[in-house]
Amino acid sequence: NAGVTQTPKFRVLKTGQSMTLLCAQDMNHEYMYWYRQDPGMGLRLIHYSVGEGTTAKGEVPDGYNVSRLKKQNFLLGLESAAPSQTSVYFCASRPTSNTQYFGPGTRLTVL
Amino acid sequence: AQTVTQSQPEMSVQEAETVTLSCTYDTSESDYYLFWYKQPPSRQMILVIRQEAYKQQNATENRFSVNFQKAAKSFSLKISDSQLGDAAMYFCASLYGGATNKLIFGTGTLLAVQP
Image (tube, rainbow over all chains, first blue to last red; front, side, top):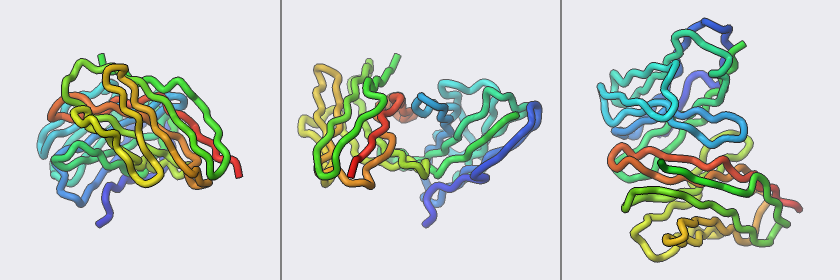
């Protein structure tokens, strides 16, 4: 049981490039979330999903897209990366209880 | 709007002593949950303790306990017998959104433990 995993752990992009971050969970959780963490701030919700095939916007969704084609995977896409998207990205999932379980994070730098 | 405020950017404690981290929140929800997460240098977000708002009793997990003051919207974390491994960033978070279960985080308190 690996819990919540994120791929990749680190990535450097140039402005305008695109990429996809993968979150996978093997706990059969319905709900999944993407957050970003910036210096001096707590985590902020980008997008979330309440089940396979569904997605919804969080607090800071602009510049990101997500997909939840399979229950165990939640993908976060950046179509045209900007320096303002330099951040650490966390994925989380939860079962029917109210506790979210977090992945190890992905550090993204956009030059 | 839901807000969570941590007014102590940094705290320091001597090993084996007790420290209290402060958190206040604001929510319009009648049923909510509060959490403390620990983030060590590894960046992993680790759940420390959770409190259901409908419960009067303060949550306790080993050396970690909370002082939940619902009327004052205060949710402080007490760490007893501090250990070097407790050094980390601590985030207070409030759950909102009903079934969608969205967390609002405070800005964190960086705890240093002095040997």
